[in-house]
Length: 490
Image 1 (cartoon, rainbow, N blue to C red):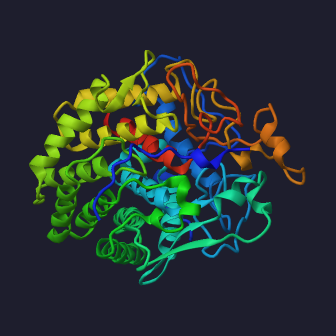
Image 2: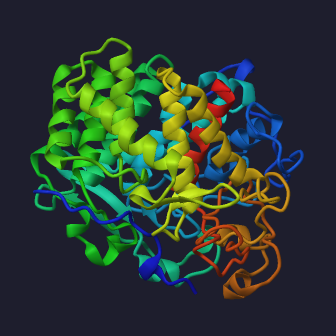
């Protein structure tokens, strides 16, 4: 049984001061990748940029998100072994976080913002991969849920499911017994990080659908503005409340989430006050860490603001942002000499030496940031894209194996994932399946596992190893963006 007490490793502590299916058209019809079929690759060492494996991996990533769907199964969902689940949740819908059935809006908000951003920034990649329609369907579903959780002006359902009972159950979500608690934040329980993350997701989604579905986009933007204003008015970290439930994603900071939300609102509205807010949060923070994840959105905020500046927008703090991006973020990840604890393995994985959880996530989140940087800046563009390619290659084949389920060769057969471990109904599913040494009977195509916890050769493909073999919606988010960036820019 998994030990949830150490389940999601946060970044280094840095405390701060106080649906319906969308159809895009025949030219972007989804690539036909059956959920039970692996995506082939070519030779293990070959570059993945603009290759069939990269296109297929991008399309496959959305199958993983479809496997995570909670609530009523949409008609467009391609995962045969999934059905309706948790339809009686206090707020139905959304995505399950990982191999469990918790719905956690703090990491989900950052993940949805990354995914919506990648579709906006690299539409040609999605068209080439035949992934536009699945991407739009999935982003819409997740963003709809995030907005639905805003049930009153100062009332937000930020988490559904108690980690203890949830992790004590191994089986299908369609058959999980009992009701699930909702954890609610109000004006009396500050949650700037949670609200900022969700605001960013809704702003980015509103831009994605601005011309596709103006009414939906306007609703998303309205919620984004309200949640941001709430988070700004009542500053604080969300895990100060409901700490017995939120520990699985314990937040280290909130100014970065408010900065990120302000940057997205600046892009969505053009209102200068949001750009000024973003810079004020940056000044209050003093600087930012370089470990992009659900726990740190300094690099995404700065990347977005620098892109807007490159388009002629007036961005207060532009020089400060540019200096940090080049001398801190890019320097640390590309040099990988121990500065900021960033190291590089002999096979090429770049990751924080203090981390064991989700190292492929950290590497590919950094890759997504560098792909975005290359989309608006010619400075070291080739170097940045080569770095992205190296991390995507590591995930897909550099070591002679893939770390993405169903993609390439030697991919994980035992991801730490309840639904995938269960045989077809009506066969029983329980802890025997957790301990089974057999490959999961259901495909979890497109899912990026956590990967090597301590460098090359430390990965173990065992369902019981939830450090190496966990999957999560946040693991796939930056990785999906990095893939799209390679397809579009290489």
